[in-house]
Image: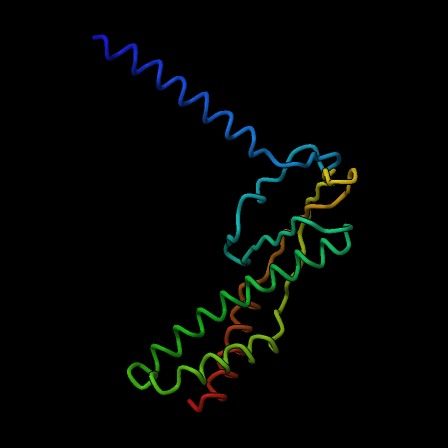
Length: 176
């Protein structure tokens, strides 16, 4: 029974020590303004969909102004959508080629990169944006930056049309 009080005391010391570690890991910035009082629910998601649309969230953490933040967040969304399409087209081509893919893997990778850079994302529309203005401590004082998230939607038919266009381009490039 002497072991129980020692165990409880050592556990309490360990937990209080961890709390100090978490406190020291707090960021060196403060949110001084935001586009709304409450963060939107969609902020914690990466992608979702409903019957007609696919939804994506693009983010940037350190933008000098809102305009550049929106451009960076939109570029990030486009990269996420292109990566999703690339993975789908890759699976389709690999399923079609099967064992004969071994000799065409490098050509497939090059064709995927080239075709997805050229393809237009059809129907991509910003729905909502959320931003925070941050006051960041630096060695010589304070600096301001913006953290921005952009919620966009893309019609499923636009997504499928883009995917089909990318597949045709890759298939033509590798000789399917």
